[in-house]
Length: 352
Ligand code: GLY
Image (cartoon, helix red, strand yellow):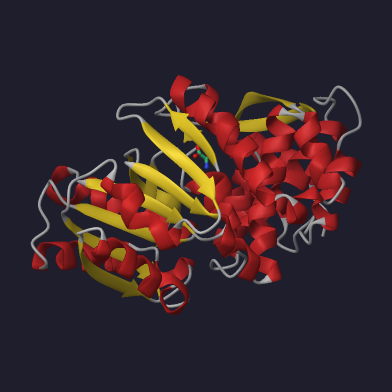
């Protein structure tokens, strides 16, 4: 078992181990008294894990009310959020109760946002079941839904009370869903640690996921502790996301988040090289690593459409947008450019 403490307010632990869903009730009784728990999950995850979680929570003395919504990014909207909030109110959850997010990134973001606004904020716990949620979205307290204008445009910062990452869930993930998480893990390697990146080149992700999750979460925890509300350093975690979010939006969210981030990472790496921002050749190595892990390294959406979609991104501030630019593997920097220059950057790195 690996435990990483995130020293935010409130502090919490991320526990990474096999079999955690089956003993989540016991684990949560160590940090909270018996209370009502709304377990928010989607139609794909519920048949796999809901009963295990319900049994464990109930045998530890918690009263469980499950809320199941249709799986997919298309559900991450105001309508589902409203339905979850009405459900919490109908079930009379109070400020001493708790929301459980059981699932991947969409579930965690949306259940977390519901917890952040219901009664002006109640506790929530993340039970990530995908690699993407395990290495990235379940940690750090970003909660959100999508708006018609773009991805994650409404949300709040609320740190979870705990993250319990059951590594047994990863074994049954479809290949594409596993690859989605690989994109965020590879992103972390490019950001902070060439030796972590080298693990992905050597195919260690499938062999040692717990080790990789712990290293990614350890890095992210440090960034979040230093910059919880994304005033500076935390912006680095958006590497690959400007173009990635644009690809998701252009595809009507048919391209999954991790696949879009992978293509976005490949585009910005090629652009960094072409524009002389990188210290050494990096784009070929990053693209090869993404491809080896089943991820795309380009997009058919033209640069003009991507630049237009990205101009609504929340990384925009007034007439400027801040990009995360790789200088070498393990070191990235923030670069703020006028929005009209974004098209040239995307053109410099675009490949179909
Ligand atoms: N996924 C980026 C962040 O949590 O800041």
